[in-house]
Length: 219
Image (cartoon, rainbow, N blue to C red):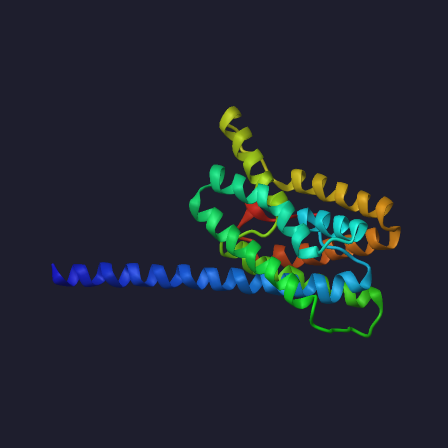
C-alpha cells in the first residue's frame, strides 16, 4: 500500500514538473517569436501573420504602441478560448500571449540591426518565428487569436454536424485577408515578404509539430 502511494506521488510529481516545463517552453517560444517580429521582420518591412499581423498593420497605420495593439486584439480571443476551449487551454494561451506581448515591449527598446539583404533577413526571421511557434504548439499553447477562433469554429461545426473539420482552410483564408490588407494598406513588398515569412515559418512548424495535425498551419 505504501509502495503504491509512493508510485502515485512520484507520478503526480512528474506530471506537475512536465506541466511547469511546458509553461516555460511556451513562454520561451513566445519570446523567440516576439524577438523575430520586432528585431528582424518589422525593420525589414515584413509582418507576422494571424491576429498579430492585424495588430502590426493597425500599429503601422495609427502609430499606436505595437504591444498594446497586440494585447487589445488578442484579448477577445483569449476570453473566448477560456469559455469554449477549457481552462487548461486558456491558461496556456494566456501565458503565451503575455510572454509575447511583454517580449514585444522589451525588444522594441533593445537596439538590434541585422545588416543583410531583406530577403535573407526575412527568411532568417521566419525561421526563428517558426521555431518559437513550434515550441508553443507542441506544448499545447497558442499566441494567435486566429487559431483560437478557428479551433472554436471547428468545434462548433463538428458538434453540429458530427463530422471532422480541418482548421487549415480557415487559417489560410484569414491569413490571405491579412496579406491582401498589407498589400493595399502598407505596400506590395511588405505583403510579399510577409508571405515568405509565412512559408518559412510553416515549414518549420510542420517539421516540429507533425504529431499535432489539428493545429498545424499548412500552405
